[in-house]
Length: 304
Image 1 (cartoon, rainbow, N blue to C red):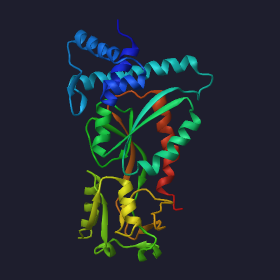
Image 2 (image 1 turned 30 degrees about the vertical axis):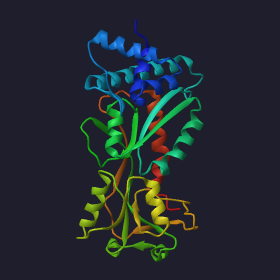
Image 3 (image 1 turned 180 degrees about the horizontal axis):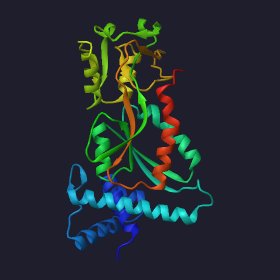
Image 4 (image 1 turned 60 degrees about the horizontal axis):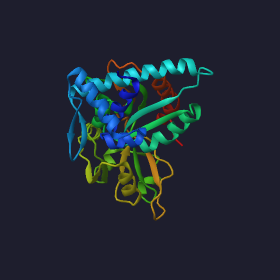
């Protein structure tokens, strides 16, 4: 007979892509997890996973549907447990999986998670980073409950809930002459080297922004990591364009990063909470969304 524990085995194996890692995480034997998978596969006559020697476990299409519903069932069960275990309305427990677009993740998540965990100390947060397409895939594969991302990668399977609107600005080294400016015209950047955060959706957004003024950015370097972009800019290799203000970042030679506004009114981008279409959010997920709305709205107006 199946129970919720067996569903947890399967969802963790799917999230981690490994029975071995799920075994370590859950502190149960690998045979127990394998047996739970086989039991459900036999009963429902489906195959949940394919096993790839180089990539580990990967969900099949029926497996993705199964894990999505299993996570919803586990979330409902956690809500039911919280209903009877709460000493007050704010006491929530459990684990929440969050996927976040990698560019703003290190700028937004540390303070956000600190605030959320201060309010809900019995909640454990799992974090995954990726590009916008990967954030959507984490949701569809059941590896994440919620995504924090930009609305630059439309997906018919994903719902977006607005957190706030963001407008881009220029980021330069404190030693760059442009750092002394209050505002910069995008036309002045025509011959300046751009350090590009190269990510599907975001790159196209920047190229379209430049094309509005019949310009093409002079790309000096491309990187898929925010840390590398910031480091290259801090060392004076060029400028970058960001949607979230960067504070207190220094290179080893003591150069800091400076945010400079653009003179033109650039097209804004929505910072959103992403969730799988038709997926019923748990009370825990709802609490996280509310924290995002409360704490992240200020990133659009913070000029400090």
